Structure formats: structure tokens, C-alpha cells
Image (cartoon, rainbow, N blue to C red; front, side, top):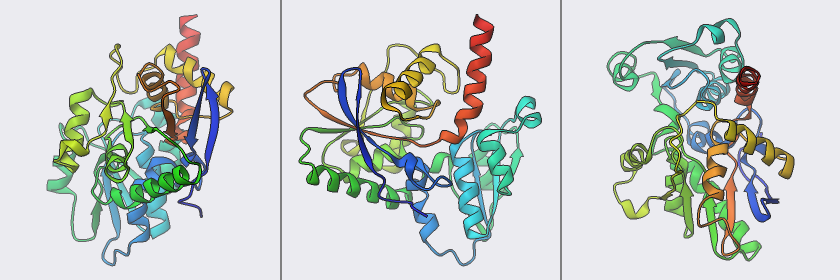
Length: 295
């Protein structure tokens, strides 16, 4: 199983050369940014642990990755969600379906704060608690390996004026990349607004000088909502680069990047592929239903 040393491919998009760090090509069961963030838990020995406890959305990439981690370790996964739609219950697909097939217990709990509920009611000495999206200090272990791969590639190819770009949920990967890299790391908030992302950064690193650069778009996008421009740039990327990207995070990542001051010949852009392609099936179905309705 290949969990590190992903290749880097050069592509042309909108008449600009950019490089793609293909973390989507790591092992199919454990790829993308979650492979980096959960690598510590995969490689470490937890003698007393028998289950992982976490939370998030019913189609979260982290749900599937943690179900794989639990299966590889021989653990149970208890994953709490606030709501599971009736459609998804009746038509299991994507990360939700794959996690169930891996033996995950996906527990619906309508609580104001799942973190607080889990902390008070669901943990014991046999539990390994991983917060939503893998926002843990242990994520730095795998992200540092990613940073070292980037450094080696930069030196080998004499890359100048490097800027590393990626979208953020909790911002964990972007934060630790900035900690371990000398170049600029730019990101955009996908789950909440800038203040939400800054709060996530401060939970892991108090020194703001070590935080990545946050880019924003003029339009206010809501996480998980369907936007025509997301599907359009996703389709354009696939056609132009022959690479399939995630439909949830990467469209906003690229829209933000191409409208920034960094998308020009002054900088060498390295975009970190987020993986998460398993969730595309359900996202594509949602877009097809939306586009059919609009037409």
C-alpha cells in the first residue's frame, strides 16, 4: 500500500502552467489529504485502543478514510452525524456507503455540539477520539512528510518562487504545510468564512505568523450547496488536464486561485490534490438533478 511519495504532474490550465501534487494517486483506500492527516494513527501502535470515535457529515471524506483506518487496525468506528437524509438512507452511495461496507457505525445524533456531546458521553480508555476532519496535532506527522516531498521536488527541479495552493475545511493540512515549508502556502475557506478558518488555525497554532495566507472570493459560498460555476470549472479542469478533482472542495480552490494575484507567470503554483473522489458519484448525481431541474 502506497501512502506517501505521490507524483507531481505538470499541466496547463487557463494558459498557465501549474503543477499538481497527486495525492489522489496514493492508495485508493487511503488517499488525498486524509492519508496525510491520519498517517500518524496508521503507523503508531495503540495497545489499548479498540475503536475510533469521530464526527462530521454523512458524506465526509474523513468518514470513509477513518473507516479504512479502523478496518486496517481491527478497530470499530463510531462516527456521529447530526443528520442523515432519507434519500441517502434509502440510496446509500459515496463515502457513506463505503464506510458502512467497512463496518462503520454511523450514528445520527441531533445535538447542538457533537464535540461536546462525544466528550461527555462517548469516550473511554479504549477509544481514540479524532476531531472532525482530522483536526489534531498528530496530523503534523504525515503533513511534514508531504512537506519534505515538496521540498525534495522543488530542489530536484530547481523551482523558483514556489506557492503551494490548496482549499481548506478545518485548514489542518494548510496550517502544517506552512509550518514546514519556507514558501508561501495559500488556501481558501470552504466550510465557513475567513473567521471560522482563522479559529481553526489558532486551535492548533497560536503564532499567527505561522498561519497560511487565506484568500477569499467576492461571492459568499455555502458549504455543500451546488453552484453552476463549481460544476463548470470542475468539468473544465477534467477536460484540460485529464485529472479528476473533488467536486466539493477543489472547485472553490481553483476559482479562488485563478482569481488571485498568484495565478500568473511570476509564481510557480503547486496545487495539492485533495483526493476525495469517492464522494464525486453522489455529487455528480446531485448536479445532474439540479441542472435537469433548471433546464
